[in-house]
Length: 168
Image 1 (cartoon, rainbow, N blue to C red):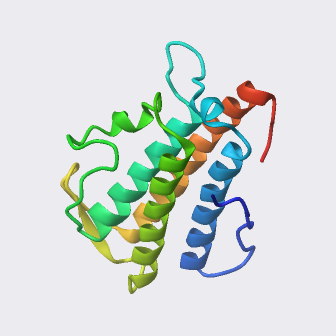
Image 2 (cartoon, one colour):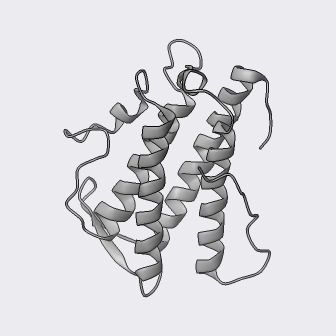
């Protein structure tokens, strides 16, 4: 699990800054889950929501795969948790374990890093089959920063509800 969190640089070029902010948010999600049991990670927020920390980790594995491997790299791979393309299945962490969720997430993060580093520029594009649009690597990195930031806010509340821990 990624538990070291390095703050983004105060100066740097666009790509370095985007990469650093994305890694910062990835590490934040890992820190929110640090030290919790499988049962605690599966604990749902409050009815009717079924959101859990483990569900967020599983969801972010899907997001990493979908945007980097499927859209930017054009790989023909299914989603991690659903063969039918249902992104919502990732949130169902009822029988999930930390090991399987984090293994999948960390594997997808490594693929994403490889794809980003291999791209000649942020202007590299891929095709988003779901929307039918062409998108740039820049947009994908910004989208993932946004997605992690939003879900890390959810993770703050989930973690506080589990053991009172606030901040990361």
